[in-house]
Amino acid sequence: MPAVVSNTATENCLRALLERRGYRLNPKRAYGETGADIIASNDKEYLHIEVIGYKSSGPARAKAFYESFFRAVSRLKDGASRCVIAIPILAKQGLPARARQHGEAWIRNGQAFPELEIWLVDTENQLYKRSLWNDWLTNKST
Image (cartoon, rainbow, N blue to C red):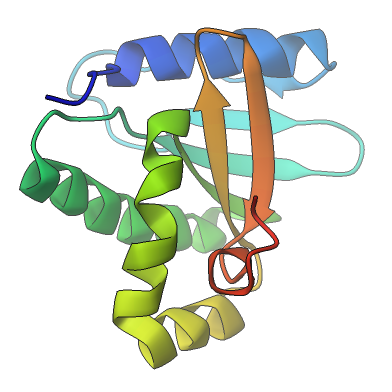
């Protein structure tokens, strides 16, 4: 069974990393409160970040990912310069297959939303890696 990384662990790690890089962050949301999980800004960027954990079940991972997509792109109305799906690094294995499975639809989503990024968060090593949505089809994400 794959390891599980909670939404909270992923969010806490990413918040700490962004803060160290000088981003200003919104306060953590209260349970049940709507809106982006993290709003991070500096002089150049206004990031709206949707954070998801890594679930033990494949169908639960897929559901969380697809829901986060719509949440992320909906942040454009709030002025986001980048709409981010932040996910634990464990998802790295499955993302290329997911992108290939959706093929043309995946590409068109990336074209329609050039602000959309997927970030892999390594909670163990306290790192994150940014990638554009369509990088997952072109192997630029590895």
